Length: 124
Image (cartoon, one colour):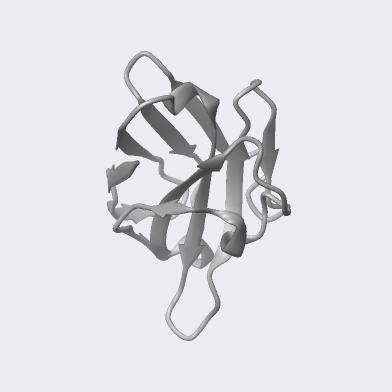
C-alpha cells in the first residue's frame, strides 16, 4: 500500500483545512487508517483513526474539532480540521495497517504503511 497525503497549508487560528490521503493497492476497505502528527522537537502523536467497520477514534486534543472519514470507492481517507489552533501546527501523516493487526491503533508502531506527510501551519 502506498499513501500520498495532501491538503496542508497555512491557515489562521479558527479556520479549517481538509487533508486527503490517497492510497494505492488492493483491499483498501479492509485497512485501519490513521492520522498522526509531529511538531518540531516532539514525538509523533496520534490524531484520529478509522476502522474498516466504520468506528472512529480521536485524540482528546482534537475531539469535536477534527473529523476522519473515508471513501473506500476512491481509496481515500480525509481529515477535516475545524476551529484550528496554533498548537495544531505540525506535519500530518496518514498511515494504514491491516485490520487484523494487533496493537493499539493509537500507537504509531502498529501501523505498517505511511504517507510522506503534509505540513499544517496555524497562525495566531
